[in-house]
Image (cartoon, rainbow, N blue to C red; front, side, top):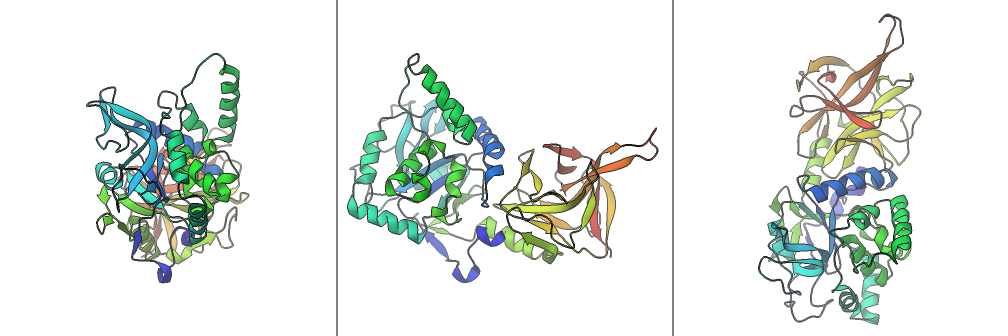
Length: 438
């Protein structure tokens, strides 16, 4: 699983050169209500269905262009831009972005909603969000070159068709529905029912516009599905990108170099992977493929409410190693992410063969000596393997009652264990931490 997220060292380039028609993804901040909503919907509807690792819960998408693929007068030779459907300028008194489109005139204190072209380097510099680029694989780029040979202006044709469309800002249902097949079908049924009652402006949202371009190229993933069914996260995991993401901005640091034409590839994702591989017991985490269950010699944590044994599990999501549990009778683990329980189907690791260890009681963020580091949080905090009793069952008047355990992680900053249980993230300020005997 880990190798799927990074290029083997022998093949790892020192930098990535920006290429037109590679996908751009933004991981909006949790403080932005729109981004937060998209993240939670994506986590609920998309992540449990994925069979491929991913880097971020992405909230917005665009595509790189330059004058070679989009020959319009407002673009400068040799400069990289982002073509996206979104909003810029001032909206209802809130300045969403000061980087205005180069292809649409925006009045002072005005805004633009819908497809637009903006200076990519300026957009990256302005935002505080992580910005990733998914480069097309050599095979996918070869198909692109064939399309450009057949029709050098196909991107221009798509741009001209959609440039006057709007963005569904006041009706986010279409964006939300892209994350769920059932929601998408329900919305289509609703729109068919009301089409004669309510006149609608023509709109296109961010990942829909990107998908339209890739469908026109003939990339199989996008030919096989409607463009309005792709969320930003589903763009990243499409096979046409080979599982690679290069960060143009990470942790509020711009990583563009060489006159904004390249990106250094030594991102925090790679650095954290090196850190985890150097930890004690790193070899005790056994990698398991999608729906691979529990390997032999897995380290027992305790028993679930129905008496089934649970084990410590972790998964890698971008720069985070997230801890959770897997039951003896299940093939996939449960972890907590963005404050909820999530079942992971794209592969996991299970803690095995831990000799000379013990559980040490602690509370409110305490980390005992020789505690076992098992993960790293989204903000870089070290996460220690921990377990907690979530309830006691059976017995009479407290006699003969059985402890029900869950497993997760604790960090000093959290002041409590965070663990999956009963379809949600539970916290307990009293817990036990796995420690090595000195």
